[in-house]
Image (cartoon, rainbow, N blue to C red; front, top):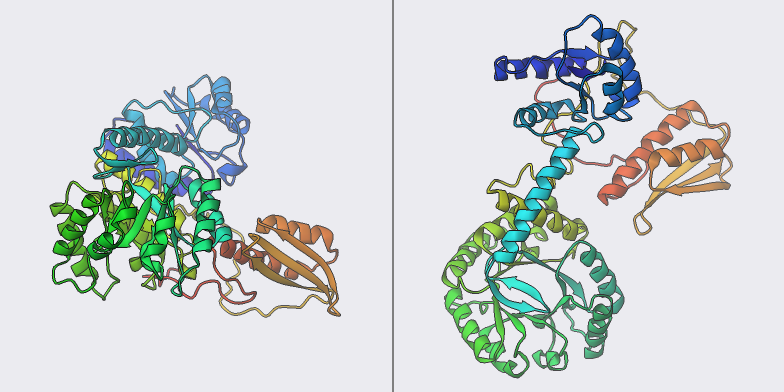
Length: 515
């Protein structure tokens, strides 16, 4: 028996029709529509008491499935009905997966929603497989006890941060929490004083002693500056000529070899760099260097794949910023595809930055992408349905609750309804991204500041406003709820928020508009 609410009844009946057709009578389904309007308002005890009356006139059931959104334990329903009861998925669209797993012998829980339980079970198994594959993979070498593999897994993530002690420490703490393996100290185009570079390295080492620490050598006005930086693990971005110039400081360090600019054959240039690095006692990592879209991306990908095939005993690094920083497209999808390419091709490290405003959050996106792609790699499947996702604005299934049929009068609003201003107060709303808070400033009609309310949850801020400021009109309250909701979305997505302006410039055109 499948229990549902009034709001989801039509959708469930549609899903059940499909299940009956697909399963060909292997399972008999009965749908019980509770009197509650939505499942999230129901308790297990209430559902159980309703079912007791219903079951008096019904045949026996092997299993009762209550919605995952119902409050309380399904054990309560089982005690009242005498029939085994579990929590199903929270969303009707996940019911087919639930039934498939049920028929496969999966034991569901009376306390944990089925979709959550399935995700945890699948994910924990995949993470174990990834760990096993990582432990068994061939190491090119080790740095600070961290395996740098010939091919993933593991896949190492490095984050580039400027030679600025305060900023670098904040970035190091940030990416360490995201599971990164280390940071690379870069520099502005005008160069950095050696004292600032040394202090940056010292400060990062203090907060993250075991981090892989890289120095982007090409960012500095003189390659000799790295000689004194003995605590660097990786010397980034040098050609075979530069390897020879500073060979005395490269022993036992990893050295990221790049092809010489304008080289007739990048592969030959990389080959010379490997020879020079090994002669210096260094540990080569190869970065064939991806170029920006429409500025050589396709040929550079070809070089990248050729290098992976030819120098298959050496770890490769993918520099991702050249792609997502130089295209006006949202970075989550780009992070997913670049990480997929890296793992499938066999690159062992990815370098990430957040240089531009549109790239904010890229470090977190690549952390999620790594988790998603490695789980898929372990399952030998495309990177989907593995418990990690970069679907932020889009979703795989339409989980909307369809409006029920009503006998009540319907008011159709197809025109702009002008506001009626509140004579007592006006409110200015802001998003403080540095403090990660919504700010609502209340002013009297004369323009005197009355109150400031801040928070991260729009509904709580709205309730506090209504509680603290007497006499806000109903229309003003509706407007404030709308604007505060926009502000919360902007805060979560790290978007700009300006009161009374649209939050997005883009919306999808409907293929058909049904009244």
